[in-house]
Image (cartoon, rainbow, N blue to C red; front, top):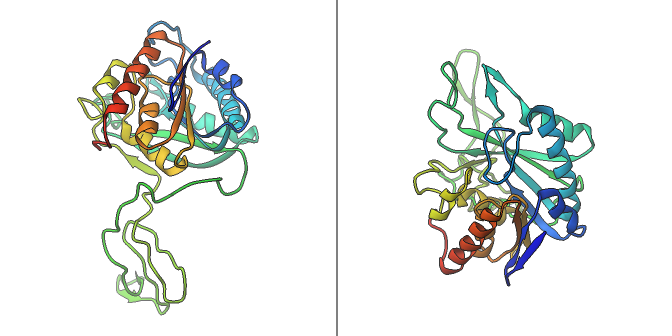
Length: 296
């Protein structure tokens, strides 16, 4: 295992479990990344062919170690599962069930929405536009830090009036109780005069739209086999890692998480088992230092 240090963080040339086991308890604020999705890709320099329950068991061990080193949220993008000969592997669902049964504390899952690859549903099913992001944490209580409106936007409409419903005849009726709310956002009641939030909670679906052909946030990303967009990493870092805190991505790939950490004023720890990807991360860090803000 080799390490290269920067003022913003550290890069390791290491296997994922070796990297995780080398870190102290409670040493990072957020874990976010994307492991290989079963045996769906051939990764240069590394033979990776875990599938089915073997892949699930491997991921349970990774979640356990990730939770040990993290004070806050652990979130991994785990794909959609593999469909082969018209049969779905169900690995995201199996992983959720095994994590739950093993006593790991799960949080509400999130969803990575993108424009799926044409034909990814096969000849008789739908294109795959959503990927599971399975979230877990150490304790069944409020996270040490979060900002659930950091990536929100102003509500589409101002507070409304009485809530309405329709009766069995289809007629619209007003409720007696006065209620107010925002379309596509949360209502916040602070006092009797009811002050409302100016930023809506963005919800559990992170819509990244098109993610190929220059939409990832960096041209360097495309030198990795399976990059995710800066918008996705930015969402988790700004929402779940405190300013000045540390985010860990043990599946470093093209360095997207590390780059977003730099741009948002956080520190990073990342690594990859492939030397080619470690060099790619180094280039990405250099690029992130020169780039101001996000082109999202």
